[in-house]
Structure formats: structure tokens, C-alpha cells
Image (cartoon, rainbow, N blue to C red; front, side):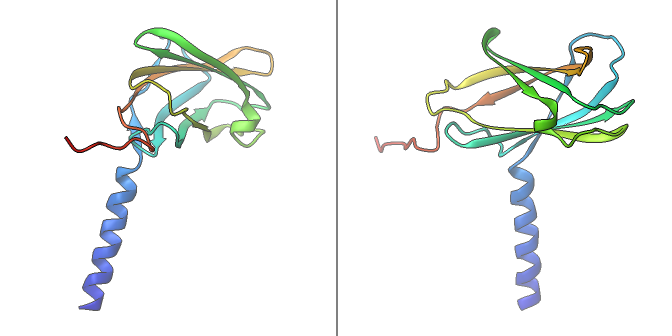
Length: 154
């Protein structure tokens, strides 16, 4: 009986872990051949909660090694550009990046006043010479309730 409870606990914890991350469909900005191919984006935790840290993990493959560069991130809300930021690539992944698979991970706390709705994130990866290595977009949404919101009884 103890063994069954143990196995059930493992299965439930795995189900919860899977539910807390979300793979997101990625689109390239143009049809050109990029030196960095993006395999996917995982968002954790999912769904995104205002006032709580969210991590965007981008799985990619590099044709050649990358010694450094920049990540340029633009966020649009219902099509309107609302936020832009630039990060050093080596702050978001281990550098130098060897050819092959690597992950870029960026974490951020979305303020509690972030409006709910549909967002589009555009990420451009530039090398040290400012040449574009890849450019992707993906959509995500933020729900109506934040970590601190409560629902009053009617």
C-alpha cells in the first residue's frame, strides 16, 4: 500500500511540473536563413502571473560559436509596442556559446499593474558585430487575476 502511495505521489508531482511550464509556438521574423535556429520557448510558471517572476527559456542551435552579443526584446500589447529592453547575451546564457544546442533564459517580474490580455514578444539576437543571428516572435497572455488579487463573494 505504501508503494502505491509513493508511485501516486510521483505521478502527481510530474503532472504538476508539466502544468507549470508551457511550450510556445515560435515564428521567425523573416524567411531568411538565420545562423541561430530556435527550437522553442518554454514559459515558467504557466500561466503567467502578474507580480510573480516568469522565466522565458529559449532553446536554440548555433551554426557557429558565439563569443558575445546582445538580445533586443520588444513587447507589444494588442499590436502596440509598449516595452523595449536590451541585454548582454552573456548575461542570459553561458559564453562563449559553442556551435550546437544552447538555451537563453530570461527572468522578469511583471508588475502587478500589468494589464491582462494578449502580448507579442519579439526577440532579436545580435552578435558582437551587431549582425542579426536570429529574430523570433511569440505570443503569450496574462490573465485577469494577479498573485495578490482575490475574488470577493457576491
